[in-house]
Amino acid sequence: MSEGFIPMDEDKAEVEHSKPTMNAALISKILAGNKKKKPPAKRAPKVLLPPCISYVSNSNSTYLKFPVTYNITRTFAKPKINEIKLCACGNKGKYREPKTLRPYCSIPCFKNLKNRN
Image 1 (cartoon, helix red, strand yellow):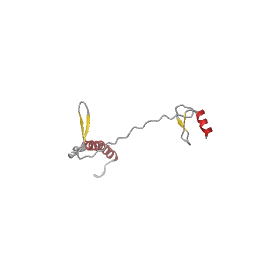
Image 2 (spheres, one colour):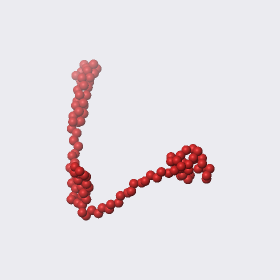
Image 3 (cartoon, helix red, strand yellow):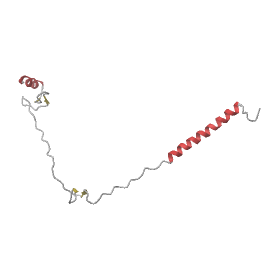
Image 4 (spheres, one colour):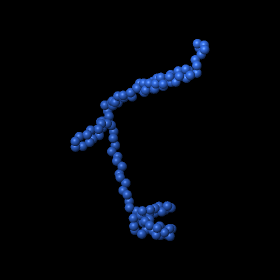
């Protein structure tokens, strides 16, 4: 045998011996990489300039405080009043006819509406 030639059995043994160390090295690199992550950056709270709307809360009440230069118009929407629609027979209408949108409460009432048209 020459010096550069390695028999097959010794070559396999050498490769099998090197595999666990390579796997261990790769696993240690992966685990080390996970530890080196940067923590998320902390953001400073945003500071508002003086003419701003503030929220004041006491034990008795809660207020919104507006600056003097702030023009506020007090327009509040009125709540909608649900009108109770009565059908042709005088009962509360649960449904609406598709064409005329008139209310009806039952199938006989619907047929009466159809006959009137």
